[in-house]
Image (cartoon, rainbow, N blue to C red; front, top):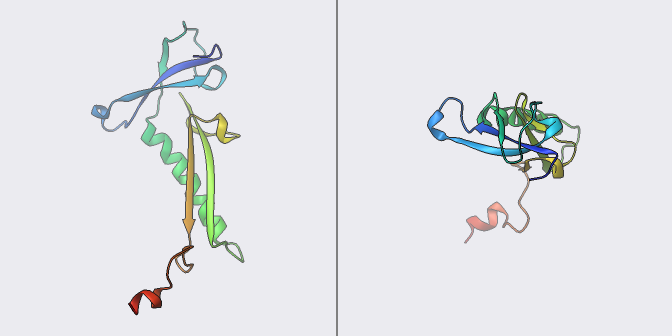
Length: 128
């Protein structure tokens, strides 16, 4: 564990305590906790569960997709890569770069009216 990091305990699902918890290594200045600890010691428990935290990311992704699909000439596919850091108080925080995150999330969407690369046209499949 690096000197500039600390460990926080994060419940997996706040509404279902039996789902357990995970321990995440977070940067000292970004954890939301300022208490000193020995290396390897858990310094606190996050106020939000992973489920609640990723609901924030999900809402951001939905808003992004909605805005991109409303472009005058929308793309046929949209891919987004997000670095997500976990903070003890704020929950999920979208990082400046994917490399900074505790998680890297890749999302992809394809419009329904666009044929997937390498797929047979719909009428060709019907004729076989």
